[in-house]
Amino acid sequence: MEATVAERGQITLPKAVRDALGLSKGTILKVELEGSRIVLRKSVDDAVSRARGRFRLEGFDGTDSAMRAVRGQGDAAGDADA
Image (cartoon, rainbow, N blue to C red; front, top):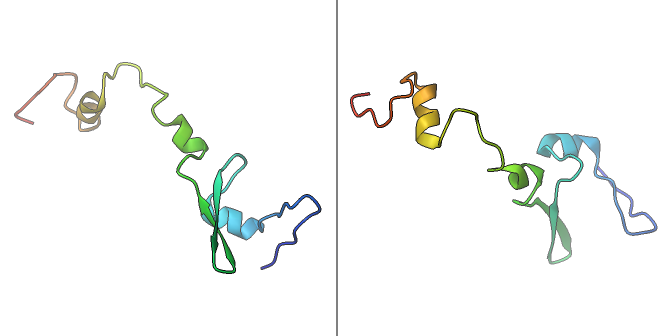
């Protein structure tokens, strides 16, 4: 696969590469040099990571509550016999 550097220094990654790595608009890539190679790595600070922790599930007060609900243990807090 090849990509051509445009006038402003931009390249377009082939669709097969974007699809294989799950790259979408807004994904942040880190650019690194390794000798004469350019290495692109997905940044941990991509769109999904920026959204992490911003949403709450209604009726759940934390991970323990959510895990009890997933496991079918209802809303009883701190059930030790489950």
